Image (cartoon, helix red, strand yellow):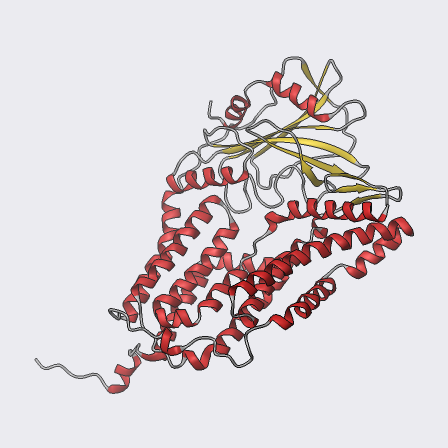
Length: 511
């Protein structure tokens, strides 16, 4: 029996050597990643489009394309190879996605998506090309919407900076959390006024400038420190100026002033100032090469078949969602109904609050609330929340979840006293009406906690290992009233309530 040789055209069709073959295989793997995790891609792009804090992320893919184009003359001189060790980075991305999906943390899933794409690039183009494109690959992390955690600290910092400037200007003012009171009015340093969007965008812009305009690390560090420091300081000055305008004129005039100053125009002015100050210190000249192809190109010990490396990449990409599906056991059932507890010395009352309040827990299976009063006239509100399992858009902790619903008139203003195993928050509504909220979170048979990261970790372990996924929250809160502070009322109620875990276990059907 004699074999018949394939035509040369058909052999060439399966030739994966050279740039065309490697880029083709990389395109197939990248498409598979984006298709398999399309829900995360869609949610990430939706955040870019709808959240003004992350509007700058829309430009990151364009900037990455520009940076790759700038490096193309040198990259073309390199030889692409399939490099199996690069799959380790892709595997790390798959593991991170698995952990992020189990914990319900979108930021980790989005970051893992970037890591998987980076790993595919490293594995299918080789270490030399990866070194040549190191900064564009790293800069892709700025496509991940992150940084919302800095909003509360920046709100407090902005309020305190404004107070310092008001004292210097001789304007009488009183601060309570993120609220500043002057003879003219009552001002809130809201989330939008925290300056977080400027700090996050300035970080992405500053890192780009450090790579494009500087060669030495000392100048890069100095530039980043100055750019971020100026952003925070300028936002404090803006808040101070708004309050000062209100003090000297009217609140309506201050609102008009803030609308003119606030926004990307303000950020553009800060960027111009930063660049003008840094310009004399730029030490990268136009036309300087981005890298030395001769130093970057190194022959690895062994070259791998691109098709086999691509197959390994696809196997690693599919492994993470398959594992989660296999270990995501059926949730244990919750009680068909839950009841408010009988608390010695307290009785349920129907008196209305000074301002309507309802915590937000999207997708909860049970949300039960009641108001209690004791013989001393102390009044507290108790809310019990239960989930049979947590998943996307049904999370115990997360953005918009908890005591202060961002779609309501209630806003977070500062931390508040709480037991060691709980979270304390002060929230404020128009009036102003001040309320303190103490929140206990439970996952499965775990102990109560006020730590949101701990809730995420316990949720992740429950989903990864098939443990009890039932979860709940118990919130005890009270209004600050004249002659009746909230904290003593909450403390008295918790003392008489007894073991919070027992109440949680009964509500979840654990015992």
